[in-house]
Image 1 (cartoon, rainbow, N blue to C red):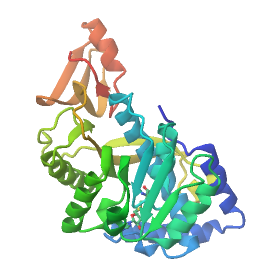
Image 2 (image 1 turned 90 degrees about the vertical axis):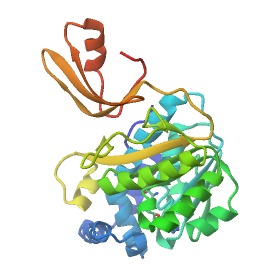
Image 3 (image 1 turned 180 degrees about the vertical axis):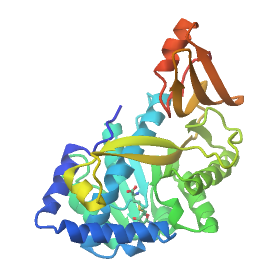
Image 4 (image 1 turned 120 degrees about the horizontal axis):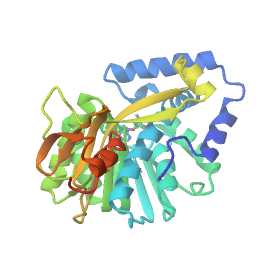
Length: 325
Ligand SMILES: C[S@@+](CC[C@H](N)C(=O)[O-])C[C@H]1O[C@@H](n2cnc3c(N)ncnc32)[C@H](O)[C@@H]1O
């Protein structure tokens, strides 16, 4: 399984860009971009090379970590999946392409699509430093127009992207992305109620179009969670010194909350359940919230059930539970 920290080639490409960079300037640009996102605005606030670099410094480690966690979940369900080509929709600095290259050694061709010229230029600089990604095709333009022209791919990914477009546009984009998916479509979003709700919308739309959920849900039925609850996961990632400076943060790590769905063309073997939230471990039992094929279950595994307890102690938020207890 892939580690959540940025791969060495990407780290050194990012480090090379830091030479002579004012951390204060990068921090204020990153703060401005985050504020725009929080206010419902999108990546249009990223206009210059300095903006793109500030965005990459502040956000790429976290979106990369969320992508590796989602790709790890997908690979656990389909260990034989060996995609040879990738479409990275709303690629920005190329985060999903780097994560997919790490996850799948079989990937040979990478097509990235994005409207933002500053992020595209930065992504291409990063890719030049990569043994796997130096020959990527990066098409600049509106996602739907570029997708319509693109060849289908084994793996299609839209990472932290579908929140930047309106509902009607999202429906059309989801349909187009699915049309270009030969095998698997992965959508990753921030782990907020709004991100989850967008994932749910695309999930329902594409199940109706014949998709099968690979992860996180162990079923294609309606989500059993009721508001204010929402399905999301968390991935811890290390923070470099530059990352801490740009975020004005002290801790040497960050926990990125994310929501995702991986959809496949063919039915897949499903786990019995998915662990939602971190299990609570006491001396007498493990209490765990599970999404199962039969709905939401709060399972209590008593210590006296030795083998089950030993297994349940190892469960972590986001894990697939393969066997029915
Ligand atoms: C938050 S960034 C995420 C970038 C990257 N996928 C990642 O995970 O780090 C969203 C990206 O989607 C792109 N985007 C948003 N709407 C788009 C559209 N309609 N057409 C093309 N690109 C779009 C933005 O330009 C931006 O690069």
